[in-house]
Image 1 (tube, helix red, strand yellow):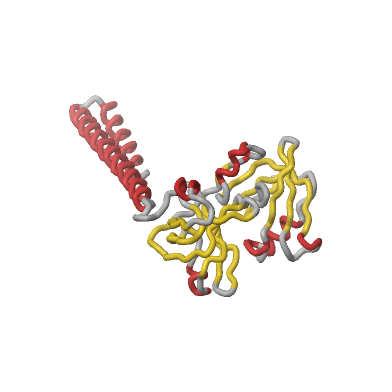
Image 2 (image 1 turned 45 degrees about the vertical axis):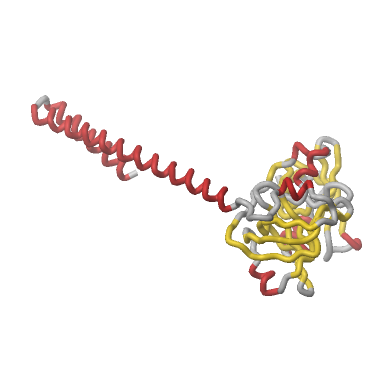
Length: 268
């Protein structure tokens, strides 16, 4: 901004001298023109260097996410048979629970997501495994009521960091392709609240939310162990009224069909 202002002032000064019609003014104008050209060239070089640096950083990020030897890609994990050993490198996105040295996590990389169920984990490490932390997980691929997960798992903390942005899955509602995003952080736009009910018929546990879109209804859940301790969020969801239009984000959990675990609600 300062460089641009200096260029403008220089040009203005040069033009004012030209208006006087003197030889000195003409020479000054030529000098100013050269200064402008040099300034433009310098700015262009700086912009090119910044662009090159951004490309380099992006390339490094991709390289950093390259799988180690013996580690599966998400496609290989998805193709693996149930009840077989799997090894993945992934990034913690959310912590659902810890109890008696076992922890449950939502994790994701750039290609897909992995639900890690009751992985052996000390409380100290559980506190260290903040969103974005990279871990190498060895366990068994399993399934429960349609939810694919990794069980009997162990882990190693690795260098690297990645936090996923919510993928808009609105257009996939009611389609078979939605399951391809299982366990990923997703969003659904312009949903209409149909009903809100509580597990055990009273507040203090999971909240079941039915939302509709284009005449079809879909089940969502505020999983208490995941974020029920957030009192403000819990009260927001429990207070939603039928007919309210909302955008929602959550992890695409699967229980006999899509059953996203809500993490964010925006009332329209």
